[in-house]
Amino acid sequence: MTEDLRGRTASEVLDDHLRLAAEHRYAEDIARNVAPDCVVLERRGVFRGPEGASTLARWLGEELPGARFTYTNVLADGRIGLLEWTADADGARVRDGVDSYVIENGWIVAQTIHYTVESTR
Image 1 (cartoon, one colour):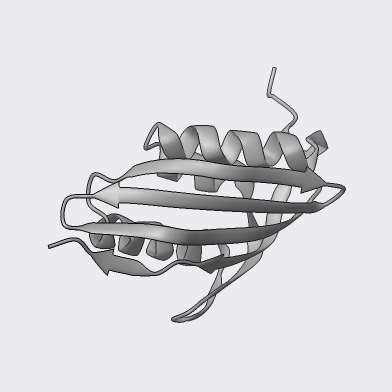
Image 2 (spheres, helix red, strand yellow):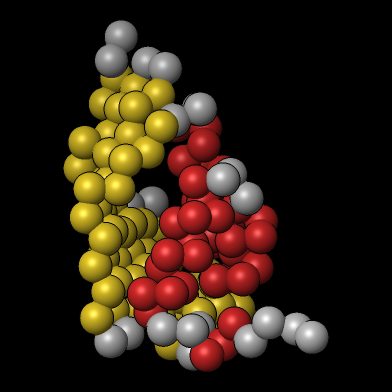
């Protein structure tokens, strides 16, 4: 029997997204949680769908190789989610990470991402 992912609450989707990301299971995360028509706004532009989410995940990995992420605040209410985070990597860190989400029918349908990479060298 196939699991019904589309009936999940915003909190359940956000929890699944963060769990899979922490396990470095990015392709599975994107397939399970990112809507085919998702729109992500990030400082470098507008990104769409799983392909856009994959590009952003790859860039984050390149900017913060082997990073240790800390989720300092995770909130969800109705269809809206908020994530505040920090990260430490070899030679770089983020202290101001903030993502916001719109979640509908078990999918992330819109997201904003903000973070500043600081050199620690």
